[in-house]
Image 1 (spheres, rainbow, N blue to C red):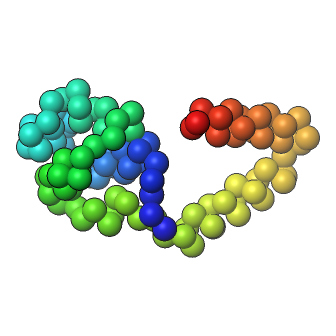
Image 2 (cartoon, rainbow, N blue to C red):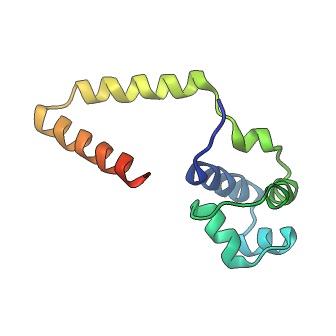
Amino acid sequence: MLVFDFRVVGNKLHVFRKRMGMTQAEVAEAAGLSDRTYADIERGSVNMRTDTFLRICDVLHITPDEVLTEEASSLDLRAEELWARLKACFPKEKETALRLLDIYFQSLN
């Protein structure tokens, strides 16, 4: 499954950067970006050009596939686990969780 959400891409880049033991400034410098631009990419608040993305992947020693794909089965499993937890909640807790999810989805538009 392809990932199209800039925040998910940014979060994944953050995880890979941390695994490499690098700071945002180090990745930015090695990829030829400003610190601010790279920080915005990790936050998922900006789109990036393909060549920028490929440079970042090169710096982090990862493939684009590692960032842009997710296992559908692991997503399905996570969704099932969350659904089971939601079902076990009290009605008021369910309402709160659903309201928060609705607010999140509205913020994506």
